[in-house]
Image (cartoon, rainbow, N blue to C red):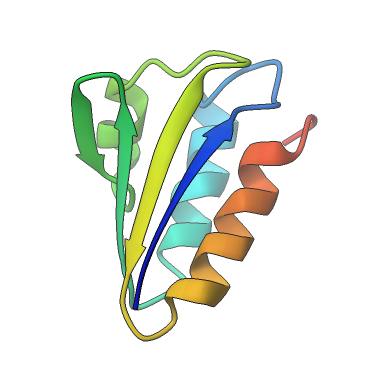
Length: 87
């Protein structure tokens, strides 16, 4: 199963340091492949360094693509992280 979602980041810190760590930790709980896109940059959603290179700020739109057996659970968990204001 492959799921793609466009989401607006709610955290005031964007996806810097702690929120990025929470995102990656969540992504790594699942077997599915996680790809994150911001603009022209496409990175592995399971790598903290890759996520930090995106430079995602509050209210930036990102695209999360999840592919695998547990894709539905993974996208819902990642969506909760992205839409949470105080990660």
